[in-house]
Image 1 (cartoon, rainbow, N blue to C red):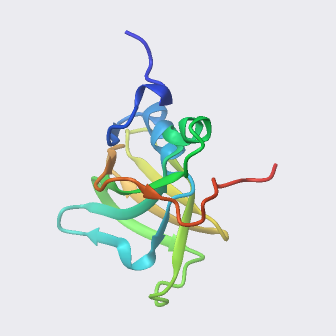
Image 2 (cartoon, one colour):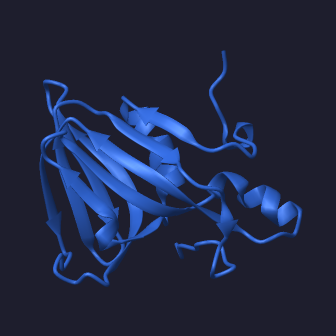
Length: 158
């Protein structure tokens, strides 16, 4: 058995679960530069679940789009963090219903007992942190891809 690569994804929808930090690194790479209105974040305290409806850039399709000289794509996807005991945010005006967030990274800060904190680092020095009993994060595309409105691939100057 070999490790999965971006090239293996093809045209199918993404449906991934992270239960280790290595798994989460794959989800983080696919969710990088995803954008979402603050209104698309749902904290379900009873279910202990934090769900975000993202518009994610299809990094797994970037090279093929360039080779075929066709537009880049985005896709609506659900990012769900399970077994959440507490959430917190920093640098976000939660009362601004027009606020659009951009995800830069998703990381896990582990504790000794398997619990820890999933941190979503946002553009503009914001962050959302979810304290969890264990690492359990899902990323699943929920609609068909669409042409990226900007027509550009996200770029991060070094």
